[in-house]
Length: 267
Length: 281
Figure 1 (cartoon, rainbow over the protein chains, first blue to last red):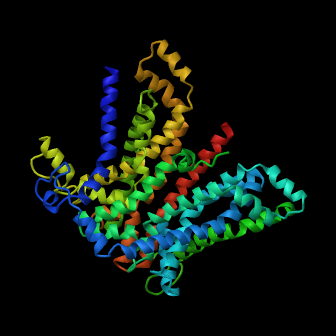
Figure 2: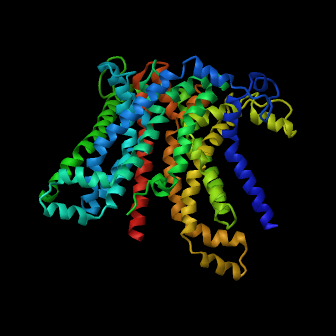
Figure 3: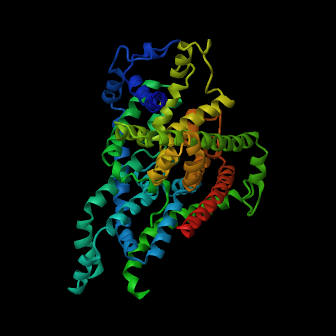
């Protein structure tokens, strides 16, 4: 009996999780006649690639795709430039001080984004950064810096200090040690930080809706089609955004620690 | 301090960037919120008086609180349920755990797109309910009112319950199995074990999940913007529409400032809890 209840609950949980994702794929592949009628079909009937060929062949996707990719890459580069020296310093500072700074960095993410996005969009209008790749990059770097820094600090911490101390004895300075010893050793961690940073920019919406008007990123295109109740194109674009995120989320699952998501800075 | 001079130089750009892009905008927004929209006089409470007179603002505050309270309660129950399911030992447990985390990998705007169809008048949910014989005519989920708020809660729940589940599962897994097995041998029923052993031991994790999620729920923006637009506004989307649709930066900043204060209070509570945990540890 207990086993039976357990199984039923498990099935319900799986349906709850999968239904919306199933719908996304289904709609992006359904002929409009199956969806836009009084009683739409529930299963996959009459699969069509029409919507996909629309977004690919009409060339609508390239401009937003280019903008999303450019901004994501640029904001990752910027956040690594700021984050690598910063995280290295944090991994070397006394524990109490560094954990206080990390907590502050973490808390900065909890500020409502609209409180930041509103004034910077007003400033960006004035200085000509609104609707530019650079403007959005600056905002996205702000969003991804906490997770990038956090991953970098924990990967620098795993590198034994003795390695570096030996270099110091040989007369190597801290800057050189960072560049020639620490960065190469921390490369896997830097790669993970870069990937999570990339995703943080790739699916970002709030700053984008304030800072990009005519030149949209992919999430804004989805928003545009949702507003027009154009399920097919919204779903097709939504699938494009989702695929890389899911691949990365699952392949890097072990780095997705509950502690970070929950914000408790680990001691 | 001299010992760390290089570290401080290394840290400076990072902190300068984060502080600069946080404190300067907040200062700017605060000045906007307290400036008179017409004369520019500062300080002035005109914008606050203005929005307190808007029934849309009161609605937005109510909606935000409703989504927070109802959403958090449901997420906690569901998250605990899922965590308890995954605590059972069964074949494929790892696979199901990975499956339950799927929503964490779905961008929020994509969730909105999926839910927009799910809750459409001719959408998936109405069709399922119709075929199950539970409704005759389609329900208007997105037209406003309490059912729209519930739809928003469900959409948000779908995205974030796995996070609550992860936090609670971490808590459950930290409870030694012997404790539970001992209670089971002593003949305590599942409900009693849950009530008297699991929940008390889980309390710090529940508190943590509530605060983290509470802060996010206050700020909820993408889902209400994309799903209900101006039909059902929350505080963040109210602020957005004041700016984008009505071009009023002052009322927009004033409502953002109120949201900011609510969140600062929540962060204060969070810090207090974290501190208590450190003392306990």
